[in-house]
Length: 431
Image 1: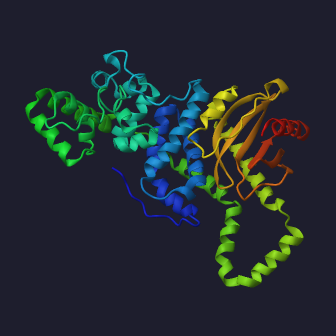
Image 2: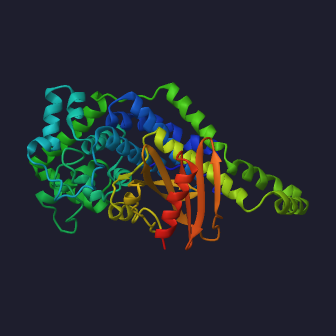
Image 3: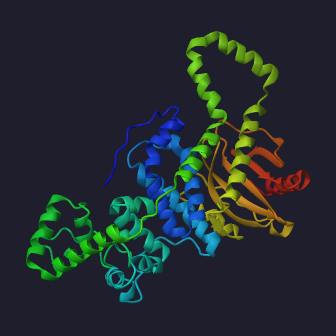
């Protein structure tokens, strides 16, 4: 089930490269989004946002399982939308002890019986979001346990332990070292066996056990029957041609960025060589100060700010507690952003998210001033520290600065004075 794609040009992958690799997964993406969000409009918005986020991150894609890579991004977008639309918190990672079913009604066996007794669609609708997504990923979209673990971001053993979803609640890749396979071990390995994910030695041990255990054979037949039932009878939502057109249009719009002329420059550079270097040096000293790069960065930040509000992706973690928001970024970024609480000054913290800016993943800390939202982007300056500048674009104010090895950029439709006051308070309270 793991698919391999040709490697893209790591130097400057094009929009055409991106579309060739990921647009074939549009129907699978829409199907998952539609099952999770339960209406066409929200599902289409989530899929479009996922494609835009994947396109921005595409330079870091190194081939391999493109479907699982993209579905991971889509799943994050969907759960952010669920949290906003339904007031649900994003599900915690599955844990066998925490997510034990309350009774047999939550097991896959109970779902199989219910699916036979009533509309399969209705049975799927009644499952919790996190369990329903695994049925869709595994039985409708054909992803293997390894791929689902990659998409959901949890260990493979935990995927197989999810009640009401992919496997019997006792599944888990453990206890494979015995000389003879016992009944408990066999039950745990039926799911991976059916997906072809076991090594040859373990397969032989399991098949030897199945030959002498009617109960395990019956369980395996039930697993096969349920997979076939869902695959053949469950409704698979198809993306409309209009959605594909929308996505392509948004990708073309996203392509109109500084990287476009930078790529053209790299193509022309070998031809123009030294004369071009001399011209650029002269023009740079006369007309293009160091803030030119930053103005392009400001435009990119405004685009991120607008998109975050248009597609309901303002926050991945919603909290007014700095000690909740700051730890949320641990393990998601290679640095720890400072999170300041300005509630007492009238600029309450409301959450944070991951975004892409300056060609890398960055922390976006979100504040509020009355009805206005403020995005504060933070990332390591490295050798590219930005210079203190203030810009105005399309009704938004942008203030950027660097401090203690970190770049900061704030953007909002708030008036310039209040945004400047906000920045001063951030500067005073960061190291």
